Image (cartoon, rainbow, N blue to C red; front, side):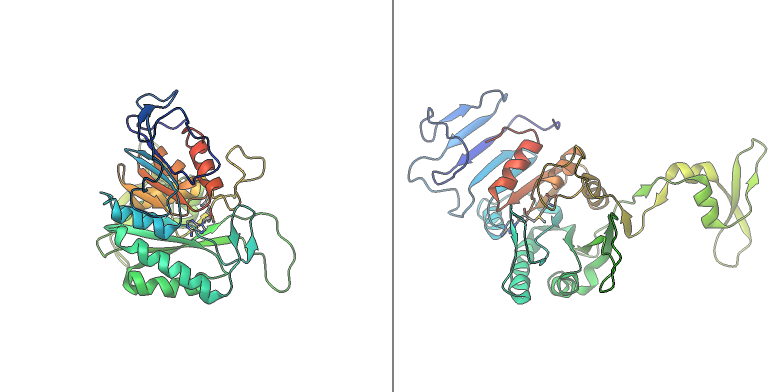
Length: 341
Ligand SMILES: C[S@@+](CC[C@H](N)C(=O)[O-])C[C@H]1O[C@@H](n2cnc3c(N)ncnc32)[C@H](O)[C@@H]1O
């Protein structure tokens, strides 16, 4: 179970909510402790009592560093406004349906037209925009089905000049010989900063001495203690200036580039929770590491099985996790070690 603050939990239940147990012993409006959770509180909404903002948000878990919400993206954001949510987000990661025209069982990715799809995503991104911090980032996860349209469309909201990167998540896997299209084994993460002030945290990945030497293509020297080094240069065409020690370079790691090789979660992996389109925690860990700092708020308004929450909480970030699909919200709650419905 993740180490989360246990001091404050409020569950909001609606009479129309289905699929979870109701605590019939509690009076409407009464606050009472939940069994097994120290300091936790439950509040039942009474008959006819309005939800806090009249939006179609069906269920929520609220802790100091976490919100788990079931509802449409636009309603989730309506709630942020109406409840005057006190935090803006350093990162909004959005992994929406991709316009793949598939039925996933848990959710549908079938649309009337490309226009209908783009109109929906445009509405979502417009709603999200005000909630991204000035120094924050918006990351849109998509693939070849619509990435080329989405990039232009989101430029119109965040500004062409604020587009920062296209991160390619290359997941590899089984390949078939193909003549119409070669195997497509990557997704695209499109990244916008809210303003020019936004900065990434440098991220490094491990590499070996031989990879470093092969990349530098320089003669390796040894000092009197046997440490290996190569010449560093102040700039192009300048003469030898300083020593770069190989052990320092190897222990720091190699700065990442925009293509990330991260395997997909295989069917037998412990990480797999059975939600279609579940993303690897390793992928979200990197996105969060790059774009946020401990204590920052991260939002995922189409959180599916809650991968963003797992990665965010493990790194000491706070998380808003929402999804329209109750099954997804339930999985998120279980995955985070919160009380199941
Ligand atoms: C690609 S999946 C997200 C998977 C997730 N990143 C994970 O690792 O499990 C897209 C999600 O968008 C949700 N979704 C679709 N329409 C939505 C809407 N209008 N509001 C909120 N969530 C929505 C679906 O229920 C689905 O869980």
